[in-house]
Length: 128
Image 1 (cartoon, one colour):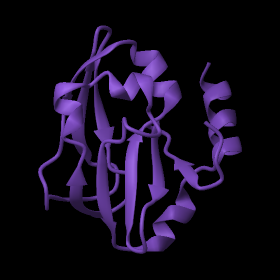
Image 2 (spheres, one colour; image 1 turned 90 degrees about the horizontal axis):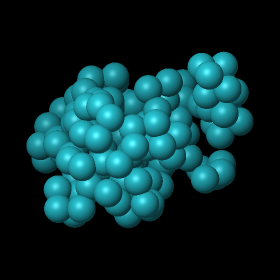
Image 3 (cartoon, one colour; image 1 turned 135 degrees about the vertical axis):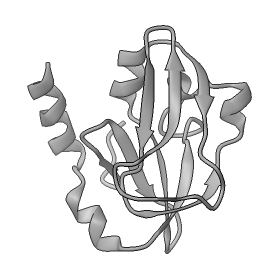
């Protein structure tokens, strides 16, 4: 998915503004492809506070178990509970129905440290 509104981390999470003081996060399309079929998700607790790069959840696939890392400092204000019953939504719609959590944004300047689509694609290409 190519969108100027979506930003990316080096650990393959996406982040998108979702309201004035909040962002949604999820796993990138590249990450879900690398993991293969996702069979389980451990979501963060509501109101839990995380520092940037802290693991907030776990994705379990047929190939591996992988952390979901917090791309910014903030508090979890919503989780995608549907993923507990249908974790495959991350494979099917990683930027839509497969989002993981919504985080209250503490410092908007942190978004400047993330990659845009072009930078993320270059990062992926360099990894391979």
